[in-house]
Each structure stands twice: as structure tokens, then as C-alpha cells.
Image (cartoon, rainbow, N blue to C red):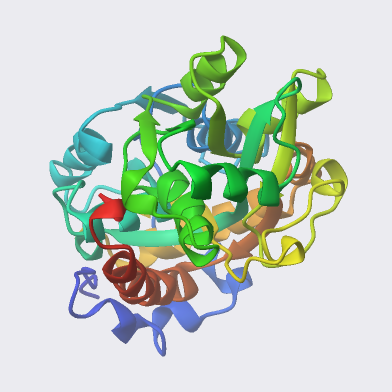
Length: 333
């Protein structure tokens, strides 16, 4: 039977067809890896995207989900993720190449920082719901979201705010959205971009910036070490575990939230059997105790959404981010 290649126009056509088969049927036949897997990570080491990609790599191998093959983690930072996506562009139809699927890439496309169209790729699964946090040094006079808002209302340039890897991506939008809602002139903020959130945190600890916007894996270890304090969470609901002690923006009177998702991409042109294989493998990763522990320890929420839901999320997030960026204007770029 002729395989069905997936492209931007026809991807959802699989919803009622082969992808609707129960997972038990998938293992009976179909595509399996026959060579090592190249997992292209579109950021530098040290941030949440890298942490989770390497956690997925380890789980795929440990759980023996890749037909005896090795998963090679390959960091390709640069150009807001474009260098990594180009690796997938050069491998159409090759399901031995994986990429990182992240809300930050969607934001980058909308703001024009990422010179790519995420709809040309195949988001096969989402495994993490990420919370973006606002953090300061433990000795900072800023203790609440109100302290931060009040300081920036007095002088929007007074504090240096670190984001990664660039302005206009998720860690930037996650802080300017609530600050604008609170009445801060976000167009005048002093934003300092770093290559990774790990570098942002190093700058905070060294006194080079005053505030960091980053996700849990970067922030939580420094909080636990007593070096950093979390003053706000962009999650829609109060957190648990490591985030149980931090209030959301909404709990502090600011009607805004921002949620990111982290998952896996495939190149354009893969077929239904290849998508089935990776969706099933990643579902097993998401259900493993080791993966759940890794995500929860980092302060984020383990979850699983497969190809259909991931594709729908991509489409809806493009629309909602366009609306957000439109409301923020130049401050989003």
C-alpha cells in the first residue's frame, strides 16, 4: 500500500484514518528505526528544552523503544532555532531525525525572529506543560509581583530583565504580557537576551541583571540552593511541588497567564506509519515514572498529547500569539 506523506495541507486527513488505530495494533506492523536517531536540539545546553530533550533521549533508550538503535543528542543553537530546523528541512520523510517542538518557536515565527514556518513540520507529541517564572536574587528587595510592577511603573528602565535566547520568544512574552496588563510601559523595558536560560541565571547570580524570566528547570535548583527567590508564576493555576510556594500573576491581582509546551517534531514528508511509531514511543516515555519524576522535580507538569492534538495546538497557538503580539506591538520584538 502506498504510504501517506504528511504535509501542511493534508496532515489532519489522518485523524479519521490510520492514526485512529489503537496503539496495540501499531506494534503488529509498520515502520521501525533501522539506524541511529539524530535528535536535533534547537538551543544551547543548560535550559529546559535541552533538559527535556535529553530526558526523552534517555527514556527512549532505557525503555528500549527504538529497535536497538542509539539516540544521538545534537545541540544546534542559533538563529532562534532555525539552524536546528534546517537539519529537519534537509531530511524530508526521514523519521530517523527528531527535532524539538516548543511554544518558543511558534512565538518566534509570529514575531519574525524565527525565519521559518512551523506548519511545514510535523509536531508528533507534547510531553511537558511549562510554567514561566519570574525570579530575583535572594537578597533582592523585590519580594512580590506588586514590588516588581511598582518599580517598573516608576521607571520602566530601572531593572535589567534577562530572557533567553532572544526577545520575542516565550520567556520574553511570558513576562511582558502580565507587566503590560498591570500597567507597565513594556516598550521601555530593559531586556537582556542570553543564549540560554542557564546563562540568564548565571548573570542573575553574578549581579549583572536584576530579574530573570525562565522556566522551572533553570530556576528551581537555585531556589532550593537558597540563592534565588521566585516572585511570580505565569501559570493559570497555583503550582504544586517546587512551585507550591509561589503565587501566580493572577493570584497577585494581574489578570494574565502564559503557558508553554515542550515536545517533539518530525520532518515534513513523514508517513502515517512513522508518525504512529513515534507517537506510541513517546506516549510510553510520558507514562514512565522516571520521566514523570524528572518533569515534576523541575517544577513543570508532565502530560501527553499526540500528533492530532499537537497539530491543533500549533494552529491555535499561532493565532493566539498573533493576537498577543499585536497587543504588545514593538515591545514583543
